[in-house]
Length: 146
Image (cartoon, rainbow, N blue to C red; front, side, top):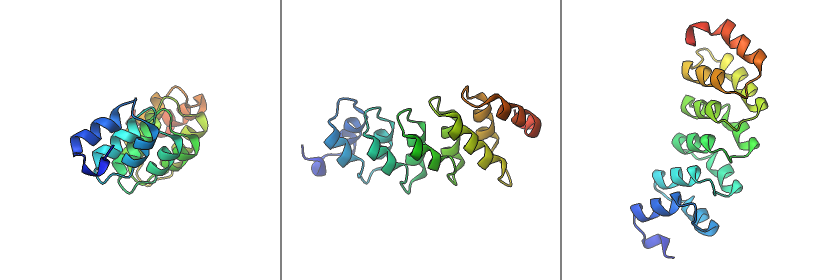
């Protein structure tokens, strides 16, 4: 398959297809087009090592989509929980497969910001995996955001 001569639309379709072979997904993860890398980050069959690499992408939308993928490994999510972009942290907070460890870390990070993001706080509060005590603290400290 000649990916170099393929157009944007063809690459995007390959990137989102759950039947695309792993070696093609690996090549597409390096593509210049943001939307191709977004589709790779969203693909449930994306190899774990590629999700880890995409979690460090310079483009925050790529990182946000990695944070949203239920198959992203915990170590990558731990790094994304302290991302400078609230869109990334928001998706970490919404990810229903996150462990309480990641969610508590994200809560601690958000709580210590000068201006915690309302949407991140709301998503954390709504996540069923956030420990009850953290929910009580959110209710106390951030009642106006809920």
